[in-house]
Image 1 (spheres, rainbow, N blue to C red):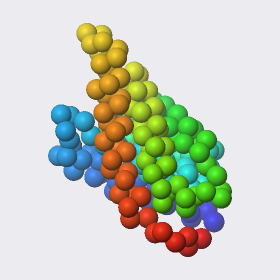
Image 2 (image 1 turned 180 degrees about the horizontal axis):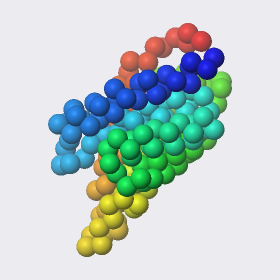
Image 3 (image 1 turned 180 degrees about the vertical axis):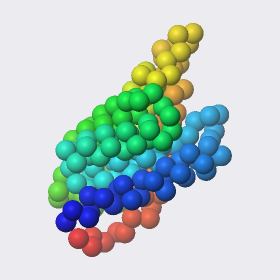
Image 4 (image 1 turned 120 degrees about the vertical axis):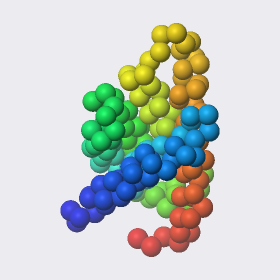
Length: 162
């Protein structure tokens, strides 16, 4: 029972290595998808809001410590994203979320919240317009993250094995 709570952490470290080493090679005009957020939304929709909020806090803390970001910036953004994703949790609709494009919409919303919160806390540039900052560093990465999350919808088993 307790071991299932460590699965996201076991997946997190290799996924963070991929996020830091390989994903920047796939960037489009310095816009990259957030694989950690996809992991967070996936496990939040499987287990619930409280678990997602705590998992977002832990994943954000580890990301801040490993990447050298301002301590608390990614932690706040991931916690907020896990909290918002938890609103979509429903025990009866778990397999429906992952087999439909609702998952992509949830990832898009959470990625938008995550990107905007992280940008406003860590790399706010006074010389740019606030609308351009939200568009360039919020909406574009959120769309790219949702496109990458479509792989989960495509490869998730159509039958419920629970």
